[in-house]
Picture (cartoon, rainbow, N blue to C red):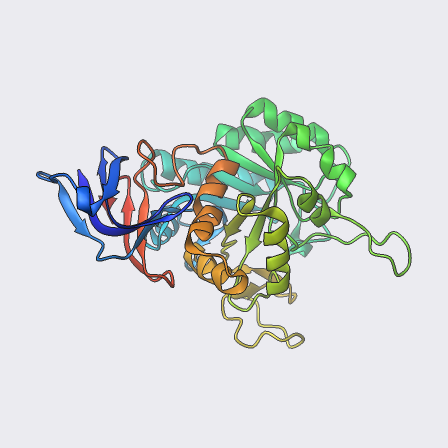
Amino acid sequence: MLAIINATLVLHDRLQPESWLLAEEGKIVSLGQMKSAPSFAGAEVYDAKGRFVGPGLVDIHCHAGGTTWFYEDPEKAARYLLENGTTTVLPTLYFSMTQEELVRNFATLQEAWRAGKTPNVAGFYTEAPYMNPKFGADRENNPWNGPIRREEYMPVLEQAGQDARVWVVAPEREHIEEFVKDALAVNPNVRFAVGHSEATPYEVEALIPYGLCIGTHHTNATGMLPKYPECRGVCVDEAVWYHDDIYAEIICDRMGIHVDPYMQRLVRKIKGQDRIILISDACVFDGPVPEVGDYDGATDILFDWSGEIAGSKLLLRDSCRNWGKHTGAGLVEVFRAASYNPAQATGFTDRGEIVPGKRADLIVIDGDFTLHQVIFAGDLI
C-alpha cells in the first residue's frame, strides 16, 4: 500500500492542491484533501511536497527508448521510458522492415512482454506494411510498395495477433480494404490510423466504419492535393480536422519543426482538448543535419541519410513541456493529451486519469515537467 501526501493532484478537469492519494494492489483506492486525511498506518508514505501528481504518460507511437530500437532490446528501451515517466507504451515497427523482419521483431517484442521484462508495454502500434511509398523516412528501403497481397501480409497480421492495437494505413492504396478486413478478423478490437498518406477525405471516410480513429503524426507525411492551379485542395489533414471522432497525433518538438507552433494552436482550436494525442515518435536514425533548412537549436529531431526528418529524440514528457509552451495549454489539458486521450483512443479504459479503481500509474513533476518520481502499478520506481 502506498500513500502519497501533500500533492497537487492533476485530475481530469482541475488541479486539486493539498491532497493525498492511496494506492493498493496496483490501483488507486481513494483520494482527498489533506485537511481530511485518514491514518496511513501500515502504508509506505511518499511526500510530494506540493508538487504535481498526474497520471502516468501513455505513448502510443514510439519506436525506441533512448538510443535503443525497441526490436533490438525491448527490455532496455521499455525500462528507459518507464524511468522517464512513460508508464504505458506501444512499441512501433516501421514499413522499411520486410515480412520476415516484421514477423521476427513482433516475436521478439512479444517474448519479452510475456516474460514480464517490459511491464509498461501494452501492445503494438505499427507503421507498416501498407502506407504511401512517397512519404516517410528511409522510404527508399520500402519493401511494401508493390500490390497489396494477402499471402504477403497475413503472416504479419497473424504474428501480431491481438497484441496489435493500431495499424497505420494509407486509404488511397488499392485493395487496402481487404487488409483492413483481415486485420479486424484477427483482432476485432484493433484501431486504424491514417498516416504516410495523400488520401482524399472521402478515401479516409471510407475506413471510418472499420475503426479508423487516429491521424498519425498529424500534418507530417500527409500529402496536399491541389484541385486547380493556385487553389488549395483538401487531403488527410482536413479529414482529421473535420471528423470529431478522429484523434490528431502531434510530435511536439522544442523548435516546432514537425508541427509549426501556429499550426499547433490551430489544431488545438479545431480538435479541442479531447482529441489531441501527444506522441514522441522516438527513433534512432543517425543521418546528418541537412545543410538546407533552418535547424539551429533543433536538437531533439532526427534525420535519415537522405535528409528527411526521421522522428525524434523526444521523451513524451518533453512533448508535454513543449505543447504547453507552444499553445498555452495548462497542465490539466496537457495530461489529457499525453495520458487520457491516447489511452481512450487505443481502448485502455483502466488508466490515463486519477480516479479510484484506475491503475496507480503516476508521475510527480514540477510545473515545467521536471520529473521527480514515477509510480508504476502503485510501486515507486
